[in-house]
Length: 135
Image (cartoon, rainbow, N blue to C red; front, side, top):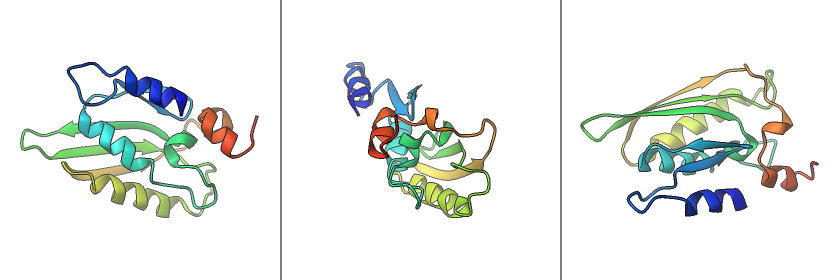
């Protein structure tokens, strides 16, 4: 949480969004206000078995926002699950697609579930680890 606030405070005076966001334990550059709003929408997506959002869990490996001249954007999200055999995968991917699609300015969303690299606890944010009582 502290790192996210620090990141948001580092936004330049010419933009209305922070230069970076924390995605699990990684600091990721933000290319546009629309991308920032999609990251925030993804913070509302949860693995039903874990009370932490998928961004803080570090499940989102990559997001690309292709903003068209028309003002509509295509969003490509590459993400994983906490375990390759997770039966909730299709439901989580559908929730990610639905929430990203609800962001004003997003026309299409593609979610790609991948398992390379395999997710591990070290990918989680410090706040997520604290919530789950992990070292």
